Length: 195
Length: 195
Image (tube, rainbow over all chains, first blue to last red; front, side, top):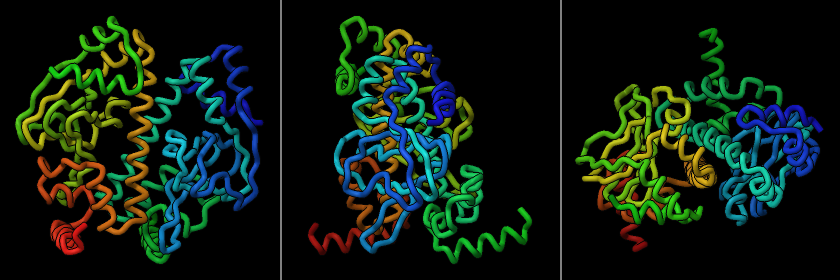
């Protein structure tokens, strides 16, 4: 269990005393995932907010034609979950799958509710976390509406600088909403530009 | 000031006693906007979280080519703000403009921080509000990636059933990321289907 990493992540937004740290940590469930193993499948109810300590997960949906659409990646020091399903406790549309061997700390939903009750400052922590996700999502919507594919690719590289360790190019193309062929053309063009 | 509406909106997620209601209400600034008046312009720092009590606002960005891209609408009983700029207090990319005569209650950012301090359960309220926005944004990203324009239009009508009172068709096309001509074709096709 990489507890230092999660405590320093939480420490970015709230200060915990020793007792509170101990209580928070007692609620976490460590898990490992093999490459291509699923943390969550479409149609299941999401029961965990997940923090990645090693490796990388991808969140994606599959459309009627069987095509995969990547919503997000979560590498080391990121949180992931199907927020719709987590909140409503209804079956979600999201799949979460490991791109490589991954270690994670899972906070079960009922434990998260208990945490809010016992250590209310976690309301603040998850409010800020959710705000940051909302900003990122909103930025991505704006980018999708107003940037060219090439500009979106460059923004993506700034957001996920180490993603190439884990994600194959067709995953990155899927995240950007373009074909792998088109992504190859963009990369060739940028390579010439020497960006 | 339509205080009943905002108190009932807050009451969906947290319970306030009389003192807390009074304090919350004392922080709000009522404002009215004429049609086409701006609440926020690109490049400004967003200083308010805004609750609409009458009318409708639209949030949009303008790309380098001068084209408008609509990110969201906020009609009666909705909250709106440039969350990126609100959080970072940096200049934002969003414009917020009234589509019709609009009445709103503005919660200044410093007052919102004071509110968190004095009535911590508002951390909970805004956490839940932000979670719901995140769900809606995530759903829209999924829709943009995996649904046809016609399916996205139908999803849009479910989300904003009364939008036609306020928004011209080219605004709706902009929200959906399609041309007004293509939207007209979709509407004609759906009219024949009698959906």
